[in-house]
Image (tube, rainbow, N blue to C red; front, side):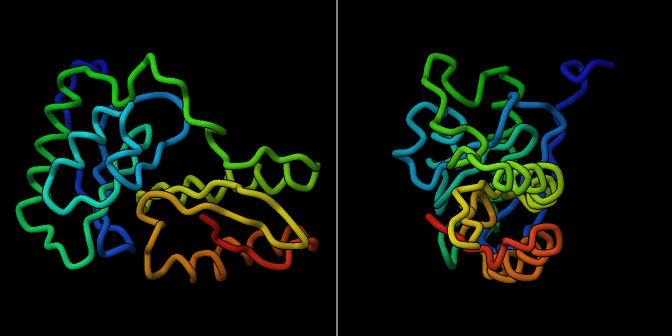
Length: 193
């Protein structure tokens, strides 16, 4: 049975961020890196994100190739909203609509906020892409390389990672330790906007 012929299935998964849930979809929504929408105005070329922002309490949306992470406003109960979001996603996927307007310009610097310039930066990005980003995506988020300066790797946190109480621990204990192990030039990792 082809992917399109199989019924749409959506698994709702908690993330380390109590305000975010990851909705895993058994379909590939698009090719390429995920896109983060921190507010409704950022979603003008993203019909799926626009629809999600109409739901009560939605504060942020991250659309990955095979999942959507929804972040609620602090203190908002997931209660019935979780089921409403799941239903909305199922109908959207069944409709065959694209999550992004195909005529819109792609977001700047898809994949990473800064292009790696030096050989060391390219190697850091390779480790991020191969090892770190897939693990972070399993928790409904993403990290993007934003630069390397004076021993500091700068990363942007997206999806469930943005505003997550455990993101500092993930940065320090996970990503920083991994990069320091391979690259002696790395002194620390820092989250940037």
